[in-house]
Length: 313
Image (cartoon, rainbow, N blue to C red; front, side, top):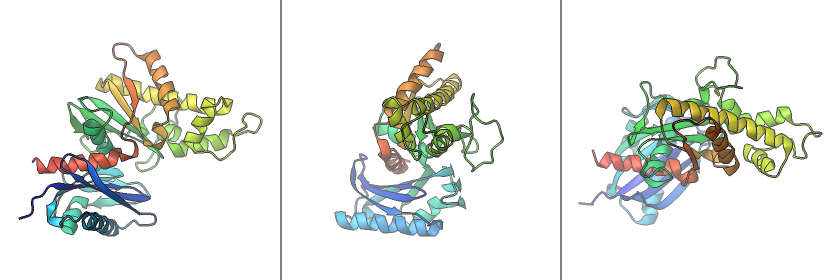
């Protein structure tokens, strides 16, 4: 009988699917990816996952029976107990998709599913910047904004599995208009990459900046570091809004560490300025803000860790 000693981790995105094969220590042995652009049907996504997993196992000469479990992260509200993806962003448009059951049927192996930002927090907790820290918050700042909360070494997901939807948080300087769930939140529109891009377009004036009109969030931050005044004002506003959110979360959760991840969150200038603002408000607890050490692999490593946790039940 083949010993089950390998894990599969899956990171499902609105435009890209990543699948990794790992050993029981969490070391990635091989990985592959596939596009999900224009693919919304959950059955087709699961079929792509099966194809990717089969390819990795075949290339490594490992039989399917040697896989102990699979963990997957989905970009949306997910019931981690049942493995049902309740809702995702418009890129996938899923509603009440029984992803855990679908994966188990397709791959004939035990599966577990959670929100992708929660898995990024799990990855940082075991393999990254938060290793050994029992209480912390992972903030994914990319196109949008979300948080993964770890309390007493356990993911905290909330009663309706929506803990960490901080993109909807209200802080000074953001819109106070009610927002429908699924639409970008008020804070997300200020801090998220898409919101920053739109801000820059609305503020751009050739008399105030030498930078081009069409820039990404990280390019705006690069311009700020280089001394551009308009880019500096955008970075300052972003850092202040993020610092307010971190300060408020610190008051409620009392977590000493915040890990920044995502394409926007990994920019050192955002971390540095946010820390400076937080320090100015901190009283009894001064939370430390650090950059993710796993980078874009945080979700994938979290998915692998989730798979490993199944084998310990």
